[in-house]
Length: 406
Image 1 (tube, rainbow, N blue to C red):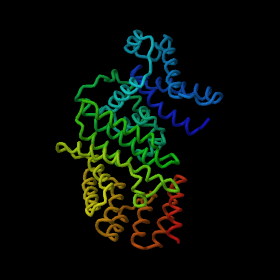
Image 2 (cartoon, rainbow, N blue to C red):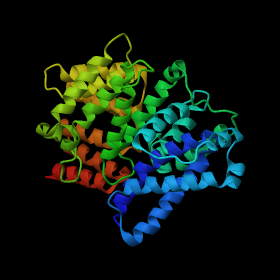
Image 3 (cartoon, rainbow, N blue to C red):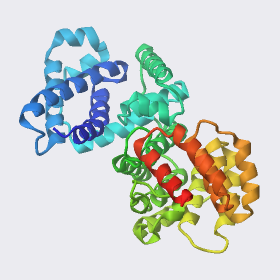
Image 4 (cartoon, one colour):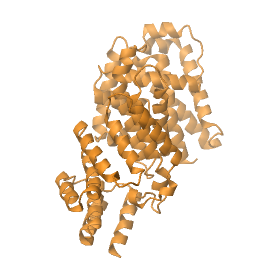
């Protein structure tokens, strides 16, 4: 069996099956849904190790999950032990369930809004949503939220406990409830996209399937009539602009190219046009969010005009007033070097002191390269390689070191 292919199949179907089963059983027993999905994957491993991966693996998994679900429905004793009387009464009227793409889609939409209940701890429900709806591993969630595995496990455990102890989880949300939870939902989608575009655990720097899943969720939200669209449009625009550069970014010998090294002919013009369309749609009204500003920054990165870097710098300045982040501040220093002066950018970069971040040392190396200080460039590239985790990141930094030493 191809382990990488198997991992991707399981990851994509995990969130689909969990969403459907949790919707069917009710949110008070998330563990039961996870148990059924785990049994499904176990059966797949046993069968596929002998027979190979079937032609339609997702259909195979859904069929097995259906069978396990229906078998569980028939076992009244387990229902009595694990399912609340309300859910049990409901399910006694249903003999079978068919897992279809439409059911999966509807279940995921409902589940992500239910899990983003503002009464739940924000970080805990984000962890749970990333785990249950998106199939992220504990390590991936920890990286995405700049935390550690132990903390994430505790947050997920507590969130499940809170859900289980509540008398009733609201699944038929009102329009006001959808609107109040939209920001949390968009943040989850944003984290999904970032994990795909800046993969924290895979040797591949970009995980295309996660990027496309985030875009699918964003587009799906934009088709709903339950909430205002401006923030959604802005997030879609941001994802379109970034995704338009994926082919150019991954065309390097070591799997990743810096922005200034990319062949702009490989940028996807259709996605840039779509990004511009959604950015224009997002501009209706007076709403300005981090997604609007980040999308506008990404838009200007697709342009080659005199005012480009000054516009990007001003947008970064506004973004930092809305939501400060060391990463945003770090990216701003590169725009500062392009728009104002390299000396000023180097001074600002040193103030950040992100001592354990290899991207930070790569930035300093780049600024000193622009300053024609080769010794400093080499010094900071050597520091960067100490903190790089992935093999291809180390290869990319080594490649830059070789160029600097020539």
